[in-house]
Structure formats: structure tokens, C-alpha cells
Image (cartoon, rainbow, N blue to C red; front, side):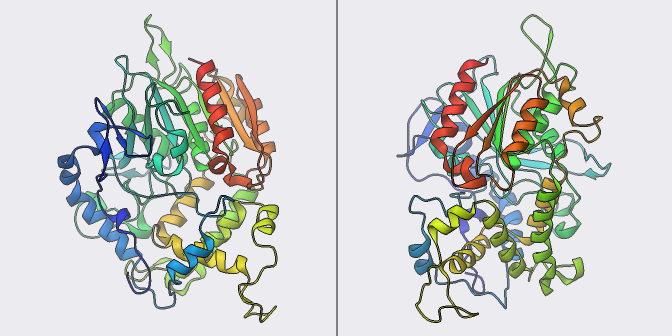
Length: 465
């Protein structure tokens, strides 16, 4: 607990599961059915070797979450009892957020799309399953805005032997976004990878193109992957998936490979973007901007010079509350909360304790235990950068030569990324087709409707090499 903010130490340390069963090249978290590359988390010495680096980076993150004079965390047990997810999906859909995994460091200064260079650019990633001899049974799964590489914590029902991400068949890779606060280079990273001053607000502007390019280098240079069977992701992860197609889905790509006959082949063989479009629209940029404005309006933003010791966490809490509204639907909120009050009196006015108000406050405060304001502004700006046509002659021109199979999934109730955007994206891919997830959950349907998502994924993977 830091001045009223409950910090989860699991986000600040390297963790080895306490109970493991299994054998061979895979291990399984007891009771979860999740297959994991044994070289990643079964070895204590790997964890210990990276502990020093993690301690430095994540103690900085703890500092950024630090002193808060005008926020008091609500009584956690009472709020959790009242707002725990009871199956209707009105909770934060990301589970246990850790910084577990491997770290890839780009060997030279990494040149960004805007011409700047990022020294010692690194990304954290996790792997599950076993890489086959031909090194091509690979699935890449991309996470959304505030997620991380711990795929098992947020799509766990899809991951494991015999499931959609079948770890008996596939080698599954999940990377933390460049600029995030879960092990990849970001605002909490020391400048030049050394002790001392961290980037903070000085961290350079990152685009989705930058994030995907660095991940592609990791896949080819660090994991020595020969080709990727499919890239899959929802929301911000879907934007990365579209970018994977643009950067590595054709024989003209600098990441193209040779097939068994020696002919050029795409490095990425298929893609499955979910709940996103070809570019961030004015509607989505507006929603991102109003969340950033909530952070900027916090006096602790200090005109763009926030203190890392006393950051604008009030603004971050409000920004998260705004996001939680856009991820769902009017019907979902009305069904869950209606006009219910936690106390009968007063029935209206500033002191009325609406259940929906208490819920949003709880989600906003809870978010402070796993994210920081500077990273949030930087990542929403990166999300706004999404435009597959930028620098490629427009969206249609960017995807015309991408002949790989593309299954685009949309959610019929999504108000943040409406279904019409997935319909357009399916038409832009020459070999694209649309699938519709039926849900009242809105945008978060890609996380909540796991049975439907799993069925689409399994069918698509089985029907394409």
C-alpha cells in the first residue's frame, strides 16, 4: 500500500508458478490446462538472472504510481464483493497481470517511423507450447491497450491442449506492446538502458508500425521463426494484426522468406484481426483524446511535466472510467445496474450513491494498481497512429498485394469499433472474409464471448495452412 493506493507486487516482480505439473518441453499450471514453454518459467535461474533489471524498471513504475494526496482507495474487500464478476462480464477483463517472460533487446538503435531512434529497444514476450522442427507452427497473439504478454490471464480459456490455441499443435507467442509498462521499453525505462533518469514524458512517440516491426525482428532474430501460421488479436491487438499483414504478409516484404522449393513466401501466412478497423477514426481518436484530457486536467500533470513521484493518478482513474463505458453497451449497463442505489437515500443529487457510479469509481481506482498515467497517454496516442495506409499510398493500396487469408471478426453490439469497420476491412483484403460475434457486451465481446471466438479461430486455423 502506497499512500492509499494498493499496489499489486505481482506487477513488480519476476514470478515462478508455485505448482507445476507436466513434462517434456511443456509445463502446465496446475488446474489451468495452459501449456507453456518450459524454457520460460520453469527455470528459477532465468528468473533470477533478470531480477535485477526488472527490479530497477518496476520500482520506477511503483514510484510513478506513488504519492497520491487526493485519492483514497475504496475498501477493497467490500468493493470486490459487490462488483466481482458474476458471469455478466462487467469487470476488468484482464486477469493476473505480470511481467513474466523473455526480453528481446534490439542490437542497434531502433529507428522509429518518425525518424527518431530508440536505443536498447526491448520487448517482453511469453511463449506457450513447443516449436516444431521446421519452426513454422507459430501463432502470434497480440494484446489490447492495457494488456500484456500474459496471454493465459486474459484468453486462458482459449489456450491449452485441444483448445483454440492448441499447445499440442502450435507454438504460441504473445508480445508486450512497445511503450507499455509490462517489461517492454516505455516511459518507466531508464534512458539508454542505464541506471538513473527514466524517460517519463520524454519517451518518444511510437506508432503501431514501430511496435509490429520490432516484434517481427524478435520473431526472426531471437526465436529464429521460419514462418508464422497466423497472427490474431483484438482491439489494439487487431490493429497490430492488420499491420502484421501489411509488413509481412507478401513476398515483397523485407521479412519475406523462402519456402521449401526456394521460392519467396510471406513470413506471415494468415491473419485474424478482431474488433478493429483499417485506421483509427475521428470517433475513436476523440474518445482517446477526452481520456487524455482527463489526465491533463489533473493539476499533477503540471503542464506536461508530471512528477514521477507524485503523478496525476486522479486523471488516470477518470480516464479509465471513460474507457470502461465505451467498452460496453447501454443495454449492458442498464441490465447490470439500472437505476439502483447502494443506499435508498438520497434518491438523487450529488450525494446519491448510484451503483453504476460506485462501479466506475472502483474500476478507476483498481486500475491504478497496474498502470501509470504517462504510459496511458503514450499508448492511446500510439493507438491513434493506426492507419494501415499511411506511407503506403492509402489503405486500399496497402492491402491490395496482401493475398494471405484474412478472417476479420466484428461484434454486432460494438459502439467503439462498429461492425461497419470490420465489413470494410474484409473488403480491403483480397482474400478476406467476415465473421460476426453476437453479443450484448459491446467491444469487450472479443474477451467475453470466448466460445464464439474459439469456434471462429479453430475453424479458420483448420481450414488454412
